[in-house]
Image (tube, rainbow, N blue to C red; front, side):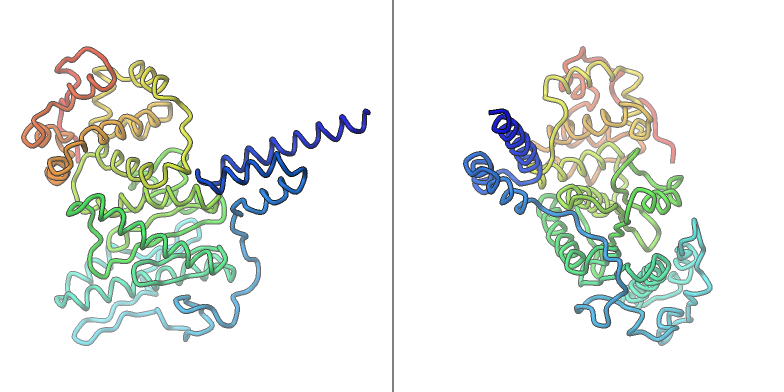
Length: 398
């Protein structure tokens, strides 16, 4: 009798454990429901089959770069030593890539400001576009060589991906970028902009240490999330976004978030609007993979208790997004709620995005286009008394 009870306890524990991961990892649908039923109906086998259905974390390849990679991969074995040392175009002064690398934290970073000065002397638009792509490719190739032979560089028509993932996963990531760019452009027509010949650049680092090693280079000049899993780096001539290896279902929302920043980089909009749009698209396109830690009532209480007439000015200026307390999370949540409500009248909202200026927190554009006061709307959304002190009060410094 005792062995049988032990067996039942172990079986129950195994089923509960597998059931938890199935609910967490698999998207909502018939397949997930069937898998959950199988766990409890078929002893042992049901749990085994369910484990086989779970998505696997990509395995970091430790082998050397193979002799032949699929089309699109760039390998030093197939290139001369000086392949990316200099940009040479007919009618333009050559530009030395090799002489303009700076090393930060042991990683090569091209002096993009110096490159921009050279680029300003190039009149032909086609040559300018090709020069930018060449410089980006050269920098990524140098970064690949620094990271090591287990790192791959892949180039498609719309993306560069540098990662230590397996080649087929890298290709899938590039395809996901193309799909996401189309979705962002569809949801934000005439607002999201990916210029002609512009390729999105994704760097995927092995772990937190590698991610911090790179992101810390730009921590003083770029806006990232505290303890973030992703960051968009709006660098001259080479905007790119970075993340780290994780469950791919978690990485995809991060890519969507950072791609949205990339698509909005040409606009001088307030940070709250930029982040609100990024979070909204992230959740709209990947809601099945995201879990909310707070229910709506708890979140409303947290927002009401945190924000007041003084704190809200940090929100309008953007400084609250860089706090080291709960204010950071609540800034993203408030921005998301505000954007969701402003977007109910889509055409007017798109016009507002075009006109919103970070110097006044978007206040003028809101009054002229949406006929509303942003401060009053915040008060209504979190259910506090409406006062003029909640509206953006001062210009945001450059």
